[in-house]
Length: 276
Image 1 (cartoon, rainbow, N blue to C red):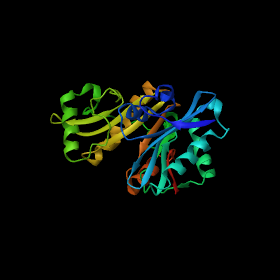
Image 2: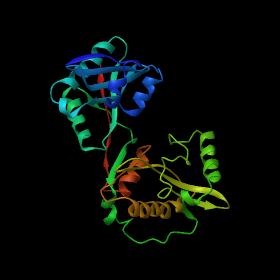
Image 3: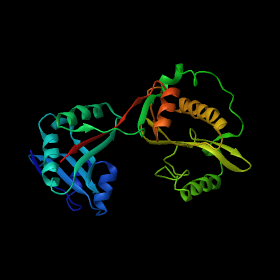
Image 4: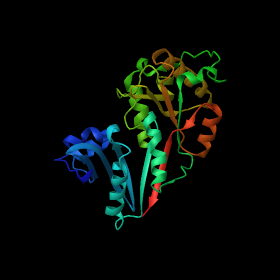
């Protein structure tokens, strides 16, 4: 196996081996370090990342299934270490387990000498929709108030207004607006009062088999229960029980609340680091 540099002119054959954001950044000429792994002139792996302060963040790392357990991943990591040793303090890789193959990354990184970093509550938790059937909160029937409505039944102007207000407060936590097509307009719910959105729960559907409860904002505490019940009911009507639902905690307090409310959930986001 051999390792070489990848730039915007040579990224074509490696594009499918990079995460979409990394491939797009490379094509746009952004300052990204990208390595490609080949065997017999066949592209079989890639690693990409960028320097933030004195930490190099690995944003994409992949070896094709037919070429795994043959030292390619180790070569990519060791090459990064050699190249970056004089330029930064540590390597860091953060990832979320959404596919079975992702579970192999933790033992690989541990074997490479990486350590797991504390997340200080900012963990993504995952569970299947089917696992909520026996949840004490979601299993019981709840009457959904008339003012709890799916995004698809809310004028887009109201959704844009609440999103712009959040941006002004620097609290817009979604990578897209509340009117973006990446949101499931049937499962995303809002509480509407006096022709304004008071509370909302935004659900992203960006890949098959995965739903992200990506942003919940509650104007009143009592809005939370009926809103989340409506999200769950709509999701169960549209998606199979094995669909993975992810929820992110933003601090230690919200992580504690999330674990109490969703004991079926398990951490699926991890950060590993290696001091150079």
